[in-house]
Length: 148
Image (cartoon, rainbow, N blue to C red):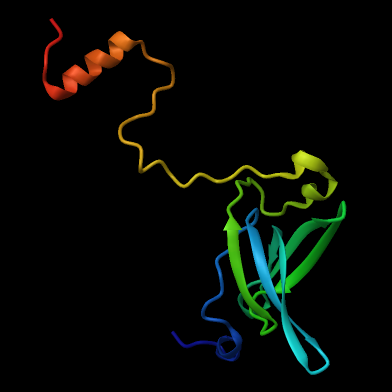
């Protein structure tokens, strides 16, 4: 299938290393600032509360708190002004837009951390505590011994 003209034009401007950040992630956005003839990189750390658009026009809205005042910035992901985006932590969310965080204060502003599976834990995780006798019987059954 042939690409449309817009896809061909956008392909020239898209970044190959664009991050796959999601809503709820805490990110460090390294943003280039040009002051006169000098250029410097400033880091904006905050929570991604919204992602809009697709392709070259994809934007993320990042919110952080500075001096007990909420500050939000919208960053175009494929802009040459954005040097890089680092994901600090993944937050667990159930919504696509986290605008409700604007009304939250203090610890209520925090998001739970998303767990990345339990592959390192062998077996099932018991829901209730077993007695020492039951644990010993389970270990004996695994090794093939009898507890008589």
